[in-house]
Length: 236
Image (spheres, rainbow, N blue to C red):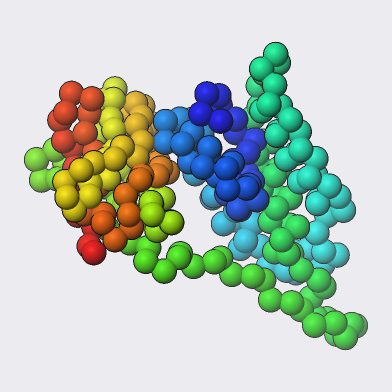
């Protein structure tokens, strides 16, 4: 996963359909792939949009073959990942199909709405799962550089998953993100090249770091020359 651009798996990643190893591989890949990171943002927006559609919009339930589409797509992606002889281009549309199949198959559109003609009961749409206990959010703006960052730190078993929304860094900067432990040691959680779009609209990155959840002190963004753009303290 870390050696190739594989956006078809992003749809499954968004809704948690990958196994643990695939999630770890995807986390590592996203930390260094701006293209996949942008596509991940689009897919999350699509997931939110689909989740807002009322059950009445699909009176006859999920489209026929939705589960088959999901299974076939995941099987195809996993088989293609294992081969190096052929490497075809994939598009965001394929990943979007996975998201749609997952959302529909998960029961976002459930049953038939109650109507005067029928005695059925409309089922509630499931809500988005809350963040795990211990998840931390923090924001800071550097008064000198003007760069700002919002950090989300999600606890795992002895390490953390991370999400960063970063603004105010000039185009062309080669940046790295570090999670700083209370003892001052640092673990890199991602790196990227600031694009023209990223400079204008900001950048959103997912990553991970081998720092115990309760040991996280702050998150810092630097360029490869060591210039610090912004540091966000994370409360214990």
